[in-house]
View 1 (tube, rainbow over the protein chains, first blue to last red):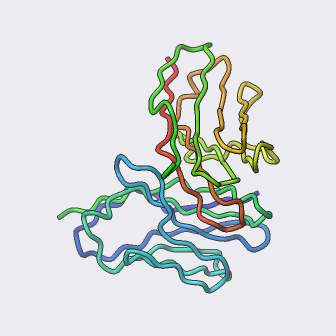
View 2 (cartoon, chains in turn blue, red):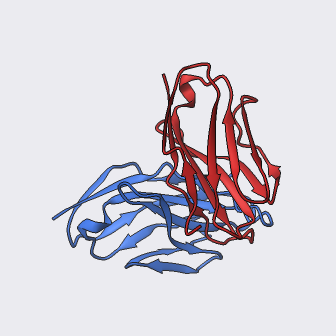
Length: 114
Length: 114
């Protein structure tokens, strides 16, 4: 079955540091890949997505590239801010018609120090 | 409504009692999903609705769990004879029912079984 593996957390960084959060996946066919974020006290929201190989998703300074050859979708940001402190989830859908159910990784908590 | 609304936001129940959790999706969204977020298991898919029918119930963990959707809108997740392992945050999401489109999540219902 489908699965998503994220690096273990939590991660603590100083403001303006470079961020990489690793994500690899196993799926049949050609999945779409997502990063969702959960800020403290808020619901899950989409951060970025990529629907085919070599696509790059980007939003709020975050980027991730769909790498089919390494089955990866690592999240990067060049300079993190305190406001980026949140839980980050990598996820995929297997493109089975209208059913876009998401398979999630376990999530990683990012804390950014001033 | 403006977003996905879930009620109650918190529910404490005694072991063995039945509970009902409600989800009001974004108006016009034909697809509705229930997920469960727990410390040990991360975020797990429970059930998918397209309109009022549920073509994918593969994530329901036991026959104590059931869900329905009426009028292509509000959905209710029912857990019968609750157990302590049912304690989790239950999340509802909706989207327009097209592959790879963004899912919008509610704030969740935190269920505690004592």
